[in-house]
Length: 162
Image 1 (spheres, helix red, strand yellow):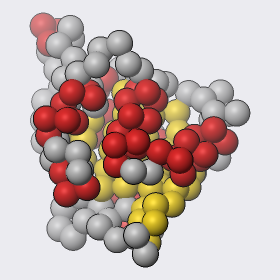
Image 2 (cartoon, helix red, strand yellow):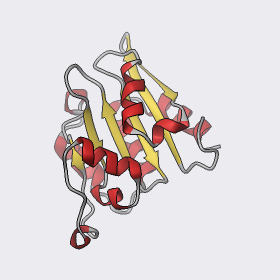
Image 3 (cartoon, one colour):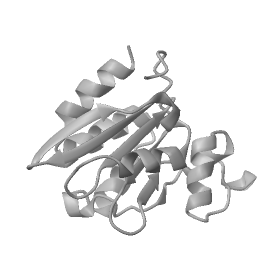
Image 4 (cartoon, one colour):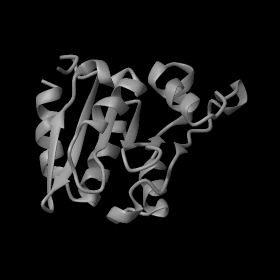
């Protein structure tokens, strides 16, 4: 299900009866935003399932399927220059690719309030994303901890990177 080399993986996290659960999604979903959205729409959960995709520890994509349009966050807009998934996110958000002058300017794109109702507001999320010394997997683990699902998330990630 994972690449086997830990390059990229996709995890679904959802809450039922007040308890967080996590599962590994098929590898192909880590490369295709439309397929990821379709799979997440099939998942259970209170408040909408959350998809977290780590791509080569370079960047991550967070997706939350809620009524209406899905909420999507790309951790680093410059990733769209080199990675298809990041480019698909920018296309979905109707945002342009970064220009050559913007490649040194690491910043997120999308919904910074994606987790505000779960206790991580825009300011806190921006602080997590602004840690330029942290890899994407470290940011995701920090985020999982602040959202309260670090244990099930970590358990699934450990199986993905073996």
